[in-house]
Image 1 (cartoon, rainbow, N blue to C red):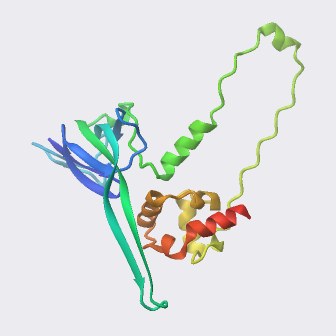
Image 2: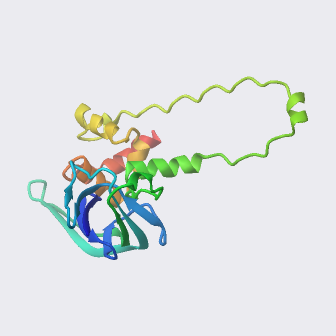
Image 3: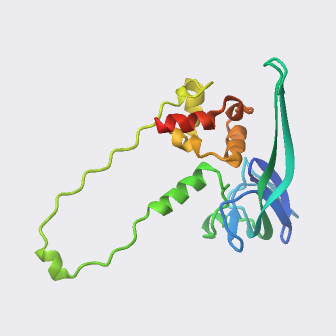
Length: 225
């Protein structure tokens, strides 16, 4: 039996026991993760999803976090004073060993869902875990009675979104795309590394605009005010 799963904008055909290299996931070596975006199940009775097979999942164990081979990126702007730039890039990858292919019940397995390390969802989960306050020991019942009632604290005001149209080449349409992807502040863009830049470039079809327009450097300056 085999399955076709989707992760990092790519599709992979896998079987139980296969070793797989995918774009970096937010998981440590030895952890078990589950891919819920299964496009097809093969075997005696093939099942094709629309777009995904309901309840199907692929479970895998994280073996290691590595870097791929260096890729040289050369850019020459013939019409801009003959400027050119060369830089290297090594894609961060996660090595996995496929352990199980579930035809159904994947939504109830309880295994951690596989998420890209730079994805909006992974960043949100990490931020939520970091903000969780430590549990405090409950005071004794007598002490509770003696304490006067305190006024309920005011709700913290929601952080206002920045005007992303201040970035070069960003208009109302692109700003709307960024908001839909969870990007609302200059600080978020300023923190992007190469992996996040590549992910958002592919996800939002920016076609290299992030690097071309220098959004990260602009965002750093705008975030400082």
